[in-house]
Image 1 (cartoon, rainbow, N blue to C red):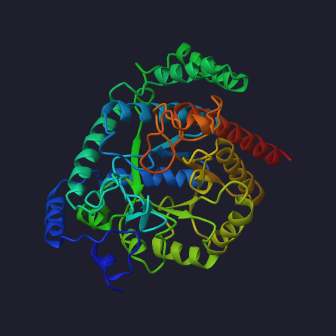
Image 2 (image 1 turned 90 degrees about the vertical axis):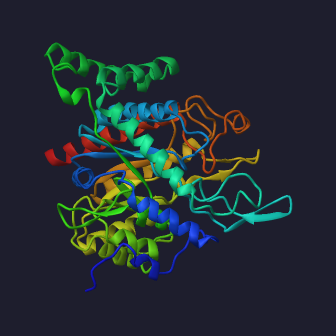
Image 3 (image 1 turned 45 degrees about the horizontal axis):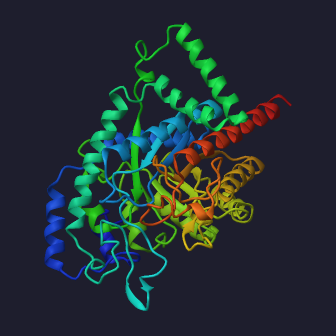
Length: 456
């Protein structure tokens, strides 16, 4: 068998990637990036793989969330802080429901490129190449803006490095103190006056009060004032990924140095394609989006290619079918995993299958549809006797109006108020925390039903 090389993907069919017109400029950028330090380190990726393996066994739970597509223009320390804060709030609630550690992975510090349903778009009779994310071209609808520019990879690297620097400071510098996180969660329940959320928050507070009385506080226990926080993104722009790939000196394996976890999208999971080839050779944990068109045979081939050693935590299957469709598609994929004896971590992405166009012309995602898919996901796993290992959301800490519904009841007419996404609609801070409470209920019920079966 030929040893894997980081350039092997170049010999495979490629989709959802730009055609750069200036090859010399592209080569120069790739050369520069190949000399830059990696953004993450092999030890971090291996540790995340261990945590994801625990989630696959039901001994942890994955919370993966963040921007649909990171923006150069909207980049700010406040935006990073707000998303990080909401993820900590969500993790606190999920930890209570699952009674296991919550693995926190942001769609941050690398989520710049986006696949598109069509290579071009038409506005007022003018056809131009589609916007593919700030790492490739620009959102402005002009011929110049839509030309792929390799120099944007350098700006993406700089922004990713700055984001990671701040996230690491937040994670260890006291911002993640558990008592602070919970006070934010209480603020949500008080403001909304939602009874069932308040009851859960009160029980969390009782637990914290008990630990404080026992002398277990942030001052005495390091784990209560710091968190582990990892980054992830879709491995789409392979020139960028290859340039940041490094050989790990301790293991002799290749590391995708662009992020702790990378995933393959539903549009780029061709078993013989460039994206699968690239991801097959790096040591990072790999996510694989599984949509309605994923066949059992393709899944078996992909699991063999992406996790030939059947290593726990290596492969996360991210189900994204749409509300009401999990019951139709998820059982056959679970069956394929069982037939292969594959070790995977099952995760629910209830966002991508539930995008609609509102009557006002905005793309949106109804909160009720997102919630329904989450409940369907848990229901199928309970029926199949398998483990729901996590959830994957497109969300932001900002007070946007992009998804309809939720306790604040964002309507289609409200969408234009604060619709800031450059690509797909995201849950806002309140909707994200509301969803965390609802997922916590599912986890509590799952644990309770499992205990009943064990007793009987």
